[in-house]
Amino acid sequence: MQAPHKRHPMERALESGLFLSRWLMAPFYVGLVVALGMLLVVFVEELVIALPHVIGAGSEEIILVALTLIDLSLAGNLVLIVVFSGYENFVSKINIEGHEDRPSWMGTLDFSGLKIKLVGSIVAISAISLLRAFMTLTQQAEMTAMDETRIFWLVMLHLTFVSSGVLFALMDWVASFSEKKDIHGGNKP
Image (cartoon, rainbow, N blue to C red; front, side, top):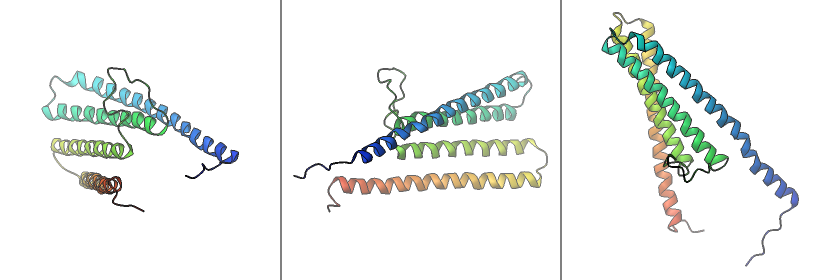
């Protein structure tokens, strides 16, 4: 049996400082909570603006409002997922174990799972934006060149997000096989 490595005090101090540097991320998560509040303000503003026009509005207009509200809600969910899982993965555990409203995924979502949830949320937000753009076009009598270019880039961006999501999932799937092989002793040194 080998004797434990005797570490130099400078090495211990450096490692301790590096470990403590994780707290530099905490203000980022507080800033994201402020951004969540900003999304709430925009959500309420959109709702207040739309409510007086409900009577007499067409179904397309109501659907567009609903899509906008869903879009803002998904963005809020995305921010909350990043705040909770980022803080727990990179800063410190949130100690609310006994709370009945604790989300089931808290504490179990690793970086890979976070990445997939983020991409999934971004794809959903992109799809809603694309649908809203198409719905807006149906309300217009004539489509301009600007609209065609905008729609083209919205579709391209959405396809890029979808492709990225598929590639991330594929990479995680391949990595899971590698991890299983390591666990079962397939890669013995």
